[in-house]
Length: 270
Image (tube, rainbow, N blue to C red; front, side, top):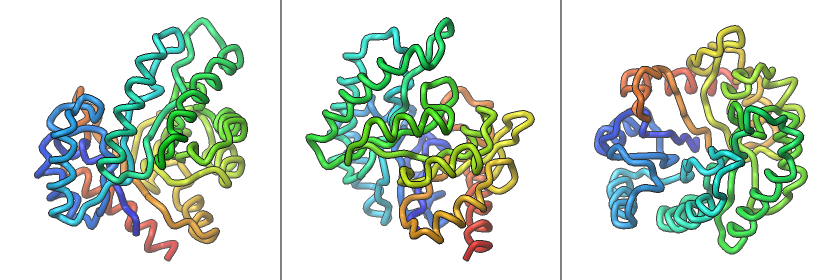
């Protein structure tokens, strides 16, 4: 199985990240942060050091877990393009096929439909930059961005058709937007989804829970995906404790819980 993880949720320390991933049979990292730094704030030398130490332990990289697109539509877009160029360079160094992106925060005084043309324009420019490489930009659904519902994700994925643009399916994020992941999202987005972020949530409270223990339809959707030939990354993003202010949200013990929950689902669907 191509199991990956946001290892910065385990610890800021790379050795602790690697040891916990190995203990849970996780062979890839979606690199979002290490040593208390976001991936885009790392130096090239640090990225190469992360790659070297991961490779020594048999661990590869599924994606750059960038924050690109978690950015206001009234901000300076040049900053996003500068960050994208760094992300593309680092993805190439790590031999990671994807860069995780978002579709920009909607200003509080505007409706999503009023922002659509700007979102399409900005994402189109980012995709054009990625098309110069072999790296694919993968859009994650996230609360308060343009692409937070199944319908608006579908809009982006059908409008911005490109080999350099694809979709990530995050179960919990859809639940937290009052979406029913199977009916409202999966049935629309299935042809456009390349890989999954594995976390679940409760519809009534939005609380994140281990996969299969919430309203994310995780087992049902993964079962259909595998039946249809899915063979790509399942990236653990547990978010099981959000008390910490940084990315170190989950702890090794809670990461074990999250990984165990995913493995239980995989056993059920064979």
